[in-house]
Image (cartoon, rainbow over all chains, first blue to last red):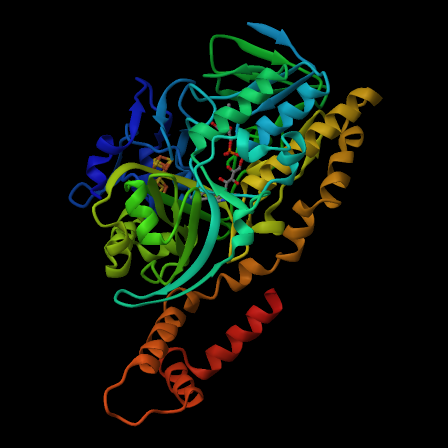
Length: 92
Length: 432
Ligand SMILES: Cc1cc2nc3c(=O)[nH]c(=O)nc-3n(C[C@H](O)[C@H](O)[C@H](O)COP(=O)(O)OP(=O)(O)OC[C@H]3O[C@@H](n4cnc5c(N)ncnc54)[C@H](O)[C@@H]3O)c2cc1C
Ligand code: SF4
Ligand code: SF4
């Protein structure tokens, strides 16, 4: 299984508006970055050169992991996508 | 949009649909609100539906009605290392007689069916509706706000059945704003297709018989375990890992999953299968000690939202506790309507019903199980110990054999240390 091919396995209807928004200032001061390794969809990545965390919400499985592992409450928004958007499981 | 109901249920998962079904059958005008395009669209789980007596009361021939895959005829546990495995298994024809002890199923089908039964009984099912807030007046919950232009639903009582993160319970002040990472796990699952005949041959099944297997030692030292459940012509395989331990390890769920799928004995079982779907979801594993406030003025909490999950180490029970607590919430709401009292006091009957049921009794009985499951050696050293013991016992190589007790002692000393082993036995004994 290659996580970068997640869109081949799982269906998503992507909203224009993100359902999770991070405060970059809070993340900039974070040493732990539990979100980066723990997210099962690899939505978070860490750029070593720029020392910054990037977040892409497109392939979010709406699992809740980042909401729990982040100790610094870096979310200016953490909600589920609007009704009708986001991940759509077919038979799991 | 503004509408008034006699009750509102947030979330059309097993808990919410059971609550709405119970209320609708009693003649209440109830709204069942779901954020997905249809109930079950957002839901995943391992795949094992345990027997649900509360649904058998509503559907005496449950197994003929619900969209199920196979009934569980065989249960096993495998201790695993990167190279070896030791497997124990129980099979009895008793498990192939109704009422079955468990089933495999798909949530997008099962949840949709159950919510549809609620709708047929008279509930109003509102989909594509994300509840973003509760309406509180005079300290009492009296409705919900939907993230759609000005959507407001009102009712004297709301049931929060919106799953583990329950923002509804949070907004009503019933759950703490911050979860304890030590009480949470995340599950990842791969759905793999395998033709029915191949599956029946590989797993020794016939007809609708199914196999449920749990794995220990397959998580590269991270606290957690694996599972494999047979559906009709697909297999659900995955891992459940503890979030504190995962975060600390720096490892990623999909990497752990790939190592698991590549373990030689498992790889053989899945050979030729194609990945159809990948999913993940968080599980409240803290048990009794993480239960939030269950009742407030005008509000009740049921299912995962109330942390009603029992991770005993042998089984992960969730759906059965969700449906049962949902049905009890319905009873409490029906009685509150009779008494016309929706205050915290009027709804407290819910707690009494729960305390009298297996939901609370089991959660209490297994209250200390999470402590045992925090013995990190269970996830690596002990499975290694079991596998290497068995290898020594089976191996014939011309060297004299040691007695089994000597062998055990030697392996235990080398892999775990005697002091650790004693302390683990003590922890396990206290937990159980
Ligand atoms: C990996 C994994 C494996 C599992 N394995 C098993 C198993 O083998 N057997 C078992 O019995 N249990 C298992 N469980 C546990 C089981 O899935 C849960 O206990 C069960 O789903 C809880 O049901 P629920 O109705 O309380 O919540 P959920 O199933 O989470 O349903 C909540 C519903 O509410 C909706 N919702 C959420 N927020 C909102 C909102 N704001 N507005 C509108 N709708 C909303 C969601 O879309 C969803 O439909 C497993 C869980 C996981 C994650
Ligand atoms: S989201 Fe939280 S855990 Fe992740 S980098 Fe930001 S502060 Fe750290
Ligand atoms: S909810 Fe889950 S899948 Fe989505 S970003 Fe957070 S950790 Fe990743």
